[in-house]
Length: 325
Length: 300
Image (cartoon, rainbow over all chains, first blue to last red):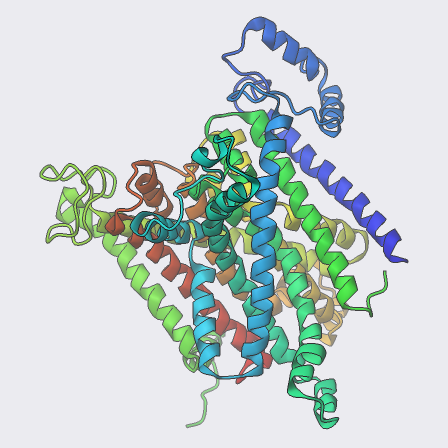
């Protein structure tokens, strides 16, 4: 099968998984105690308003009809109105999505490149002080609750030294001032994003480094490494081109497996730093019983995870030419 | 001295355990893990004793009448008091109890589900296998913490047992894959054939003949599941979606944040440190067991 066919197949799979996830959500929110329509109808709404929503989401129809209606609404981008903000959920999600993508993909890219590079070096120089130090360091960050690391970072860098703002993404003084230019705005965002990005990077980094180290040690015992040495190739070439490239494959696989678990770290980091992204929104929506918003945020986070999985699969095929789909 | 032949089944088992312990003792990392675990166990047990010494050491209701606010470490309160004048040390002890409770129960349930699914899937193969493994694929792509958050929104009840159940139901995916691949190779072995010829049923072959052989692997994954469950509970509680009737480390950090005391070091640092050390202990134990179960990793 060619690569394009494979991608089409995978996209179809993602679509299917998404429908299954949505079905779980559908069942879950209809199992709620109390009024089974409460997840769409806020108690503070007027009766007229309730009637409109009921008709719009088919809540007065039989359950199978509601289900189909729910799927159709989703693919049309109609998620209902947020109880708390009294605005269409779609608009709210659209507002928060870029911030989340910036933080999460940024953290994944930086941490995995750092982890792969460092893992490669410490496996190459087996038993050095660097290996001991970075393994210990990585281990601690692997076991630390990420929100606690965030709190400490806030305490030291924002509270004690005042290097970074306490939270948010845009400083009101810069963004409300019409005279501030693009550069100033970019600098402002950078200042806000540095701390959460560093914390999230630290959290993801340890895992990738430890996996890379193990995988690299395994690869270094292969025959083709011996061959490369016998050929008299420079050390650096053997390390980077012969060993590291093959050793990277398990790292990509673990990324695909780990991503579903590690987005939790993104949610916790966003909450700790009051970062206006999807993760903070899902928590706030849940705490204010804003069911349509919580559901939609979840579906979008799930979609991000599925896309990340797809990217990992494509990357794997690119790195390992032996893979034929 | 010649090794005595075991007379009963239990003696044989005890000898087996002793042998495993001898092997485990060689591993320094594993010993550090066990040491930390024993420390937290004692700490958790002390938590039951403290309120009986003086009611002000009760983690939930022990408001110190002389101190009704935050206070730094002192003689009566070794680690200080929280916003309402309750002893932080006693709260930490209560947190250790909750961590053990959640970590172990969630991990046992998840391991039971995962091992059963893996065994059944690997043994029967075919359609059963495909169906079960596709389910695993989906379970593994569900974003874990966000799902727990929405589920807690839908369920509405913030009970520790609901949390344990959700964590367990979401974390058996990885282990079932490992057990499945192990089962695939085990079922080709002669002893399975022998059992079948002797007339053993499928269920008996799965649970009495193949099952015991995959158990070491299950135990290995259990320690990592305990770690994950503890971290997850802490995260959920920190977000304010935990069980507010029990004092866990995550709840402590949530109280610390919501009362605007994030920068009160003697309140913010200890719970996180406890979470780190406890998860570290399970990680180290897991790594040590890993080296025993997979001899390939030894002496490298």
